[in-house]
Length: 86
Image 1 (tube, rainbow, N blue to C red):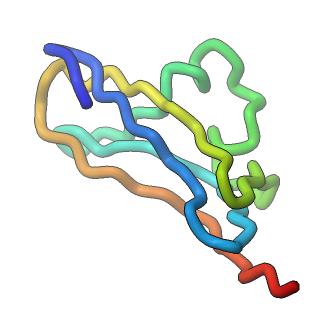
Image 2 (image 1 turned 90 degrees about the vertical axis):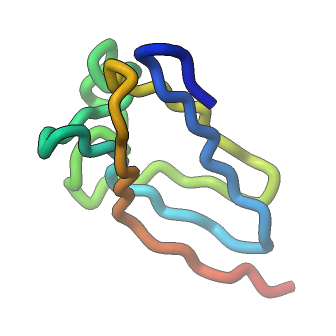
């Protein structure tokens, strides 16, 4: 969802998997824009590709907001997931 200048996304793990999110950002007019939470707390694990991972398991999610100025944005994320077997 979005407002005039803010893009809000919900990233969720829906399957029996463990997500390892290393970095997430959007690109607007060739510029990388980090989530607002990274401006407030730059040491969050998903703010830079440093192989320090934010973990999500089934049912967990992150809601992230990006200041895009209402312009078209492309979402980028780095990381991986591992299936969880019982």
